[in-house]
Length: 285
Image (cartoon, rainbow, N blue to C red; front, side):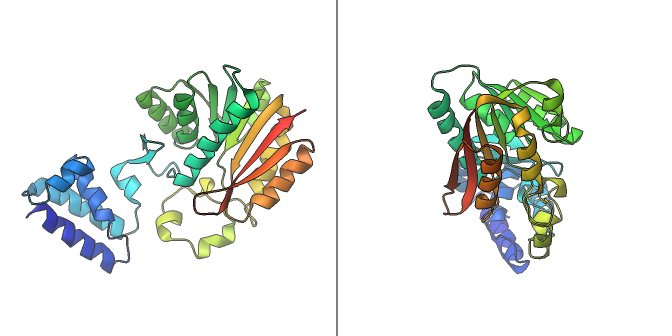
């Protein structure tokens, strides 16, 4: 079988199963161990029988609903590959915009100040914490998560990518409050999906990605409320807070921040698709 024939079979099969027919290309490229340019150049080559068997298994798994990223074991984020498994949320493009926006606002708020202390709350794969550290190497980054296997994977990603991160197990801000340490920046992409939304979500998401990283009560605001209530205990007098939010939640989250920090400059940022996805608060006490 030629490479292009295997690809055509996968596309047709996935389309029949109401899955993304383009997923076959990502899977086959992975199993052939090629970048996209090499893969496209090999379309008329004979496909190794063992590779085809592995490829078929991957296609069947995706047809059953398993996300491509969990099948191949990684996802790209900010130009780097992060290991992922079903203990962590799959990093998404919107979160890249949170990182980019945070870096830009750090420069604006803190100027040339070095060795800023950053806390990433609910780090998951470590994508936010690691990217911040690698993009601005003088940062002192602490990342928390409540689930030890999640932290273990994040630590593997940090080691593989050469990022010096302090990982701390605990529920949201609790381990930071216990330590008594104060931070210049607190950033988080917490769970924010209302539990009722499970009814219409794709099973690719709710059957595979960890629910503790997705859902947050009836209105999706439970974690923001807990975070914002405790923020005064971990922030320095001048600080930056950045949250990713669900579309339509930005005003509610901004109001929670305004109540906690009346003097803060609150900013709602829309993503590349025009959805209100990020809330920043520049705090000067």
